[in-house]
Image (cartoon, rainbow, N blue to C red):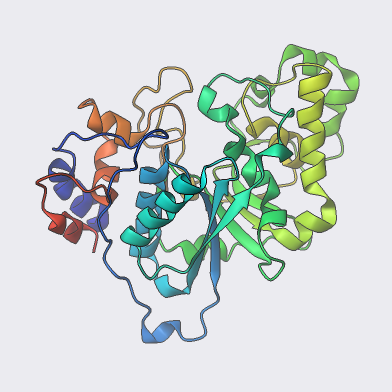
Length: 347
């Protein structure tokens, strides 16, 4: 509660200036250097935590805010290694600009940029309810086991529209048990059938995919996942996800929501459940209107603006939702005439 109070206190100052959002086209905006966060003596021998996020112009502002939130709340911030995935279709000049923005905000951050070959999903993506969900980079999470080196046995995948307000090591340490390849918060109260079309449920072979699962299939959000990469490779999960994308594209329209349904088809009922506190999702509203929403009941370790409404866009437009005030102090965008010491609120 103390952290949230400090965040709210600084929010009014951080949201006051109206600036360009720094989207996918044109020049990238400038970003301020984040405070330096160091390991303490107790971090000696701490394991390296590997975090994967995408890196592109449209969501760059959100990615940098997310990184800052992770470091701010980590007990051993220097023990975190970031893996950023950028599209292979990005021109060299744009990729260089993204690297410069990342280095300007976090000069000493242990980070690697991996190029995702968009041709891997060319011909496999079908249109969905929101254009942003149809971008090839949205599917890069399917290929993390191929993109990251074999020396990385486990990775925490995070979307670029979230804040971590707890020590990410607690999530990283999730026990996957003897067999699970993936861990994430599950939401079994959600209407699972709504994530697939009538054509899917009428087809006996398609619907039978959920038979003989360890548990009844439940919805989970793919914006926060702990993945055992060794088990992923051994299980051939990339090919299994691609199979359902090909069914959708070539045989029948069985879902409407981007890269999420293939994950449900492959993993629902086999996911290692994580506390809901690690993905308070849906703060961006639905995928059409992006309306304001409140937090779900219970403790909060991660705030996720999944949905159409992104906090930086609503703040810039002068029409923020109440919870967008929690995101504002982590915004590293350099505002003309603004004082750089606003970051003292999260240092």
